[in-house]
Length: 425
Image (cartoon, rainbow, N blue to C red):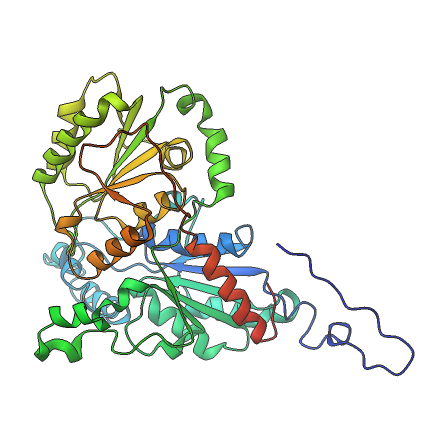
């Protein structure tokens, strides 16, 4: 963080006293020193909030809140509703059927609760409470300065927009991921370029004319929109240096080059199955001779059939290690020590992290991607940060590119806009 340079003390020649000495706005009321993050329970979404907070130098002074939906029973069918309405319906149904045989249909077998922060590296996470966040921001403004609000995910939109509506003088609100409408509810919106794919010529051709008015966004990005290439994340240089130290004893002795394989799972815009797993296995066998070591990891979304076929094929192979999913998670260590990556095309988060290292990134499964996912992969290829994984590669032949620095670039824009408001970070 850059040091704050204080102006020279006022002289005796009648010069006007600088505002910093008059306390215009209170003790530290123009300096943003703290952040409130609002997540939705998705590690990918919450890591974006944390990644931006790190880039802004606020990682040591933040609070993470989580918006949670009711789960279990009939609630699994109500996720299309706005979260406030969903919670209201859940409360009514629980009260009405509390002592009846239909209670289990309404609430399921397990009550929902806020999970801990282990998935994003925090010891605890609080249930989002808009009134509390607003009260603290207002009551501590004079002493602690403005509060930076960073939210990510569809369910957080109503929370962050309400905070800005009622406490706009005390907060600066950033919404990560496109809110689809009324972007003026936020000070800044951070979203990937491919979210505007619907406005491109190719995007328009894919949308039947009858449905075009219902596809968002409808307008080009405005002045309060910051575009990224991929997803924000926490894998910055400082985090990777720490991970390199933490995982040194386990990963440093491995034969080189070390190939890291990250397998995600099918999504609506990148759907695949066991055939891709078989293709991956064949290609990995073809490059094994040029690898010193291979380490494979699966995500929470990886289908059991996909992980089973990969584990069965490489079980006991002397060059291949498969992470069993138990803590500690080696992901950051893999980013730090890898010589090259192979990543399935479905995961924008994993690709964004790997492409921030400047190391070779090979992608498998892009032929299964459609809509804005295909636009994302086209951008990566045009920038030269990824190549298709065909099985013909020599992993020992390295190549490089200018690493993606989305979080740093967004942080720079945040500082500019905050400065225009008369505040500093």
